[in-house]
Amino acid sequence: MPSVFETSPTAIPITFVTKSSWDAVRETLPPAQRQFATASAFTGKRGGYLALPAPDGAIAQVLFGLDDDGARSRDLFRPGALPGLLPPGVYRFANAPHDARLAALAFALGSYRFARYRKADRPNVRLVPPDAVDAVEISRMADAAMLARDLINTPSNDMGPEELAAAAQALAAEFGASFACTIGEDLKTNFPLIHAVGMASDRAPRLIDIGWGDPFHPKVTLVGKGVCFDTGGLDLKPSSGMLIMKKDMGGAANVLALARMVMDAKLKVRLRVLIPAVENAVSGNAFRPLDIFTSRKGITIEIGNTDAEGRLVLADALALADEEMPDLLIDLGTLTGAARVALGPDLPPFYTNDETLAADVARCAAKENDPLWRMPLWPAYDAWLDSKTATITNAPSGGFAGSITCALFLQRFVEQAKSWLHVDIYGWTPSAKPARPEGGECQAARALYTLLSERYA
Image 1 (cartoon, rainbow, N blue to C red):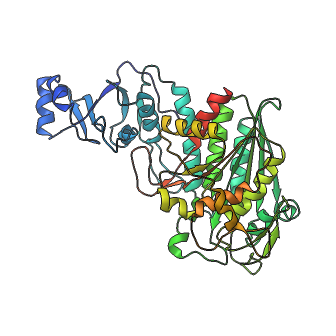
Image 2 (image 1 turned 120 degrees about the vertical axis):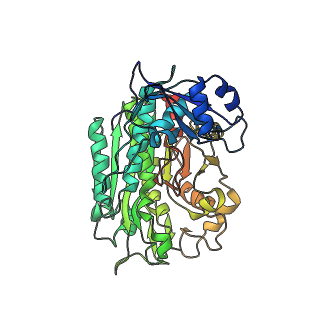
Image 3 (image 1 turned 90 degrees about the vertical axis):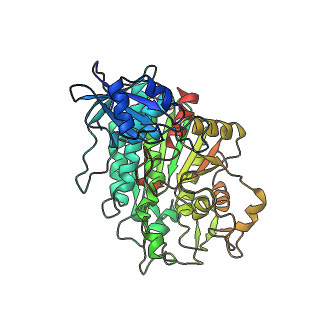
């Protein structure tokens, strides 16, 4: 996607104001512009926009309202609304927003439009990069976010397991990475859980495997849930719960976004990306409640609910990843409604027993305005996974602590990795916000990329 950044000596200035600073800024305006702003009832409120005219009728400058300092709900991505407001042209920041780097990133993210199925012209606006802001790094993050959004927004009839694998293969080819894919019945022996979840669909399940980087560098493995559509299986979802299940491959989309950033930045890691890509469908051979399967790791699993399928496909992929004893193992998935009940759509929980990693993740999430919140791998709840007929169940009864018990389930498949991080993302923006249009969303990937950049630059 073309960069939104451009250098121009005639760029139109954008002046940021707040309600509390507006009176002082207004006094600095030329009299005609001051009168125009007064007549337009501009007050500097957050999100307020006004283009001030020059004597020749061109735009002299743009005023844009930010949140006041100290506002409880201050949005550092507020400037992401500008691409949808500005007339075509090249612009620059005339003064500093709250965070110039995040404002530039928001501007880039706010330029996104999903136009695969209907005309949706991308805003014809460009931004002169603010001083000391790395436009290449910002573009890298924005391009990766747009990849994740495009993959999630594509409906399942055009984004099944085969198409997701093709997207992963194209990314691998772009950066000279290796690509392998295990498909259909070939999964049955070594990846029985992935096969079980995907076998009811006429679109064959598969395990995508990408490798990149120097084999002597630290091993970082990313695992992403790639359920390309989730009916719930025989424990069928209601229609309202099924409506946006094209996003259930959001973990895979965000892992690919993260991998794109890592490879584009040439971080000093031995990167592996594993994506179990399936469709959880309903047919005569669908897996059933109380079926028991033996996982790749040898753990037997009783199916307490066929709608808890994401943890099953991740389990086999995590077991494979763990066998390599990576320095860092990260999995992302759109896994539990319990996480949304607890923290809402914008704040994914993460889990780890590595205290240093937890602190670094939280710090990088805050730095990138890519929020994450640590939740506990509470040992006392591990017993809730017990089954009377198998080693564990995939869906404990009772309904309590659903995101925690899912994390504890996945932890059973990670023993040898030096450090493990699990993130329960939503991958979707229910209603548009500045820089975050309604639809598929890139969550956790920017924060994790910053973490990896700090550790492996």
